[in-house]
Image (cartoon, rainbow over the protein chains, first blue to last red):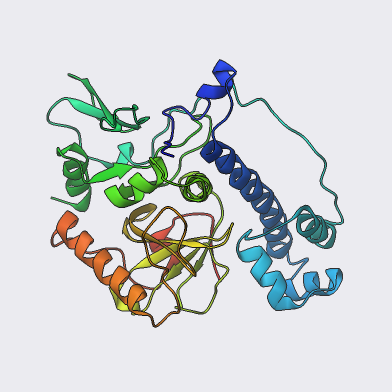
Length: 153
Length: 186
């Protein structure tokens, strides 16, 4: 089996097609990371305000301090139970389900690297990840735009 | 000339050796940047020869995008000390080589690279941590004193020299020299 990443993360959703495995995997990790970031920010707020330490959090949820440090270090194999415990211990809060549509979101145009690179002397090139066509043609599409500044998004 | 000139030259050259990691969703913020070697890009984009690899690539992409989205990053300067940090500095520390850890599912992956500037990471090599993934011949990196770890660090340094010549990666012990905001040393 040979499969590859589509150009647009949402192309199958737009077309009503089955979502490929790598894209479902992407969203699995994305959601896990979002939970982690949400809980970590809650902890950092409390820590910065002097209301909570890792040791105190560990005591509140019946875990060893080193385990709490590990959980706050990276999401790893976090479960809903992990997030629930941490949020209870950090702020006495509970997670509530919410979701939002992926399609139709407004894009953000800021590009971090573009603002740090020197102006292009030639035409600029926009580099995008591209789907492998079945015949194995190159996966990088180069869109030339003459007479404009650098665009690396 | 600065390293930013060199990066611009690398992105403009053909055939290309360095690629910008883009946000999968344009609605996401982008406050840091990551450049990918051909090797890392090829893994993220496929084609993949096994579903395990395909799944792992999707998960890794999301983990790498955490960096460019400007999310909270946990950083460990001491090799072998904090296995749970998002990024860790590798041994020997004077080489200024770092890895990004993508832990789930097993086997965890390590993406090894160096900082070209503040908020700009260059991902040069990758490898599975504990065992081979079906669909790739890459050997696991294994324990911290393994030949595989030594080799990947040497390869990384060689890649850097080939790409950036005399420019040195970011070094030192100040977290904000590597990541300007939302960084936590563990």
